Amino acid sequence: MKSLCRDCLGTDVGDARRCAACGSPRVVVHGELDTLNIAHLDCDAFYASVEKRDRPELRDLPVIVGGGKRGVVSTCCYIARQYGVRSAMPMFKALKACPGAVVIKPDFAKYKAASRAIFDKVRDLTPLVQTLSLDEAWIDLAGTARLNGGPPAFQLIRLQQQIERDVGLTVSIGLSANRFLAKIASDIDKPRGFTIIGRTEAVAFLAPRPVSILPGVGPVFAKTLASDGYRTIGDLAAADQKALAARYGEHGLRLHALAHARDSRRVDPESERKGMSCETTFNDDLTDLADLEDVLWPLCDRLAAQARREGVAGRVLTLKLRKADFKILTRRRTLVEPTQTARAVFAQAREMLAREIGPPYRLIGVGLSDLIEPADVAADLFGSTEARALKAEQAIDALRDKFGKAAVTTGRGLKPA
Image (cartoon, rainbow, N blue to C red; front, top):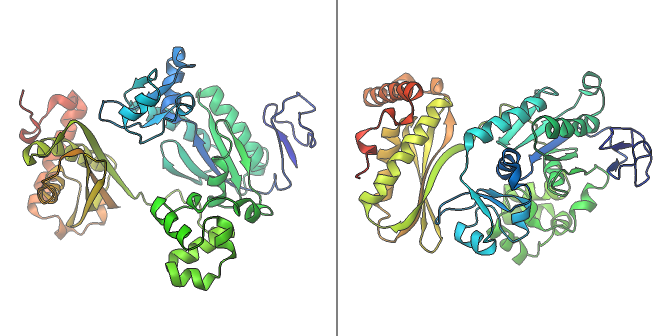
């Protein structure tokens, strides 16, 4: 199979611009079409697309999912993006760029349900699915052709059709020989894209592209690379491997491998989650410790409840603060005992917060990382105080599950009227 129609699923339709069977211009032609098996699936403007699916009257309007005059954009539809709106943009900037946008507060229960519907279909094809978030995942379809009625490319295009028909959402897919190339491919032709990067053209394809598209290369590191003469991926590919290692250490070796389109990472469904976090932006800047603690506590309560719900405990605690000038300050602490209780999270976060009082802050967040299963914690690490706190908070979880989240409020969580 060297060609495939994305509308009628006809194979070997030739290299014409339109399918000979149905006349569609959406024809995929590639010499490695039937041999590549690693894919990256990315939902198109996921939160905004779910909202538009459920409210058809919004179809032709710019939609921003976020909220609050001091909040940030969670995501936005492609119409809003034409006005310059982007994820993580402060809401006041987004509304200045697109004053006619419809702003919707996030509804994560709805987004999780949509995500589950999508990835249930993906897992019908293979168990080798490594999710990165609610809306994207890597997929390994090696050895599934006979079972699923065609090579991976055929399965994936059919999957796109099924998701659009049954879930009412669109996805973009990149297909290649490894995870790195597949993710690059999925970003090329959004929305409803299907892009292939084969082994034979991968190095030439990457060469003119900026180093900033490489994983692990953020804006600061990209500037460092540029100042050292590495502006494009081709510059890295042409560089001496030993020189890169001497300058950037192990990361230099990784950059050299990626520049040559090499990535040995497997699609791992059991990949350990890196962390979880909760944060909020204030309507007005806060400077007083007591006021900040009043906001911090419910975040700790929510974070700990999520950890218990997902059956993990965290060994590293992160406090995040955003100043009035938008500069971000983070503080991390490795805990003596891995925890999943609000009591322990709040106690440690409050200590870190007290040391940073002074400038006005517009946002506060708290996170847990280095997650482990509670069963992996030695019994003697959970001292009696932590054990009692865990038992009490589990009881609160049960009451909230039965009677609603507002059924039980701790003294610390009560706010003055």
